[in-house]
Length: 318
Image 1 (cartoon, helix red, strand yellow):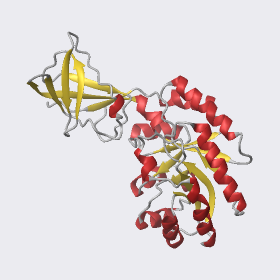
Image 2 (cartoon, helix red, strand yellow):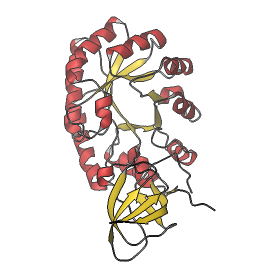
Image 3 (cartoon, rainbow, N blue to C red):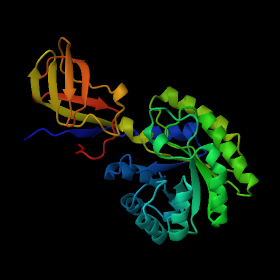
Image 4 (cartoon, rainbow, N blue to C red):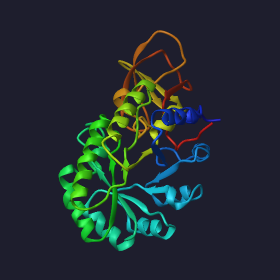
């Protein structure tokens, strides 16, 4: 049988959930289905009684098979008309947006929903492409809220853009946005702290401390997090195989999985193998043109490599 890439699940999700509840007991979890929506993961998350964060019709449909509409956030800031109509038809009434343009669509398709304005805080990592794609600046908050109010749309909170690096400062930005809303007589009742990506337990505890300190800037506000990577990345190990080998200046290996994927940060990608021996300068090509230079022992066709902390949900699992 031909070798195929596959993931092995070690089910750390419950352990990480307990850590979350220990460190952030007052932050409600909305699991982000875009990270991993396989049946085994969703069964665990559903047993933990979390909410769900969805960015498409398929994800909303998956979430509705598990919970009630009031436990779902439609978190895509830039939505297709058909997706807005679907959310309205299904009673999913908490939506995220980040622009005046989006308000026009929402007014037409889902006028009675509640809204969270996604802000791009000053603390987003420079390499985080989502911080460039989504989120408004603090300077834009006032004009967006003024338009929402003129359309009689119900803005109830703010959402921090994904993967910020200084959580206290991010929440301080939310505090500034809340002050702007208060000046416009718009009451803020929800703050979404975004997605945690700290897999190291000590880093998570440090970031959680910053969040708790930032939460003290608010009164009578509910805190939520549309979080995915924190729970599933360290629960998965991706295995793939050498399918071809060439000997030039370096050893060149071709493997049967892409090395460019949303699950990978190629700047810190660590590829391992259980093959032992002297290390040689090597190059790995995946199914794209991207290459990775690495020191590896002598490998042959069929040898297995692996990457820990992977949450690629599009390949076969065992």
